[in-house]
Amino acid sequence: MTIFGVALLAGCTLVGVFIGDLLGILLGVKANVGGIGLAMMLLIAARVWLMRRGVLTRGVKLGVEFWATMYIPIVVAMAAQQNVVAAVRGGPIVLIAGFGSVALCFAATALLSRIGRHPLAHPEGEPEMERGGQVIAGALQPDLQGEKA
Amino acid sequence: MLHMIEHVVLEQSLVAAFAVVGIVMWASHFVAHRLTAGRVHGSAIAIVIGLILAYIGGLLTGGQKGLADLPVFAGIGLMGGAMLRDFAIVATAFEVDVFEARQAGLLGVVSLALGTILPFILGSSVAVAFGYTDPVSITTIGAGAITYIVGPVTGAALGANSTVIALSIATGVLKAVIIMVGTPLVAPLIGLNNPRSAMAFGGLMGTVSGVAGGLAATDPKLVPYGALTATFHTGIGCLVGPSVLFFTVRAIMG
Image 1 (cartoon, each protein chain N blue to C red):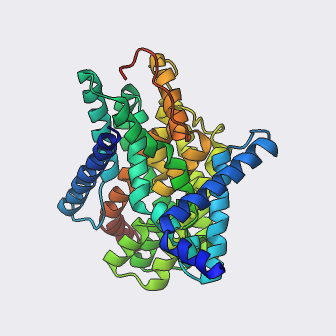
Image 2 (cartoon, rainbow over the protein chains, first blue to last red):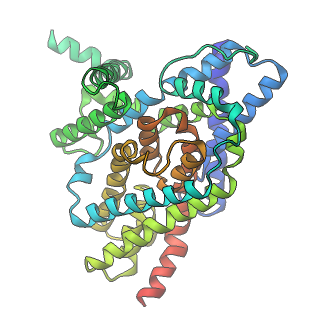
Image 3 (cartoon, chains in turn cyan, orange):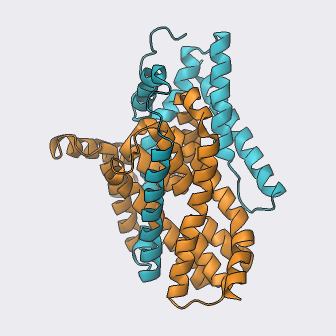
């Protein structure tokens, strides 16, 4: 059933955010520490576990993947509620610090991805990743051949 | 008649938001295919339209939540708010290649460390260059260059004044906006085309909104990898901002 997938996603998110809050309190920080990242790892683990047991049904997949396909529209709604006026009107300090830090981090990304390059480490994952990309781009995809439905 | 339509839209705010965003997505894909022959991602155009709408909304209302401050578009606030955004981000993890994600370890740590320190050094240097001399203000502005949440959290913890906090939020928001718009443009130059570079990118850029938007507009399959590391960024920034980074600045400034 589809709701099982949605509920699984909700459960992982809630547990992840809770642990993130807990970590924040333990570290004495007024913020969630990695809650969403932890939730993502939980969901990845849940998927592997369900697949091994052969109970990753179409319904469960649909329930989770529907929300993955809604990702970009949600990001667009997020963009539409940024405080763009303040960002644009911030003056020279804001402009220099903003553009400068992004440029610096882009350069560091180029450096790190060059150091960590490994083009052929896991080519067999390619079709699965492409399918995932299609889902996140907004289209539900049929299951890959050979994967349990 | 108009009043009745307004009433429906106000009452069904989230449903109305789905319709509005759907129209924006349709228009941007139309433009991407017809006017740029597919060279520009439809999602990239949609995100830019979203930002322009946010600017217009901000001008009209003088509020801080862009288009969502207009009552008829209040649903945009719910649809694009932290709750559904995080829910959808977690959902993208379902498409992750487990083998690739396991490689995150060291690369993630290095990128998170650099992504916190580099923007902070730059932001606080700019603050010094513009004449700030007290460690609290310098740290707060530097922290704003990490993300727009780290800035105000650090500022509040250190007791910075509201002008400085506003500057630090604006810096963080501008950073997120630049990342959303700029990432698809520079992606080929910085090798952002595989899971590993996406994880480095997420840790370095940090701001979840920026990373979420930037990768969506570049290549959707990279989204979960970038998000995986980016979500640790704000927490770490809030941890070191008011502590290690502040003490360092205070030691340097005397």
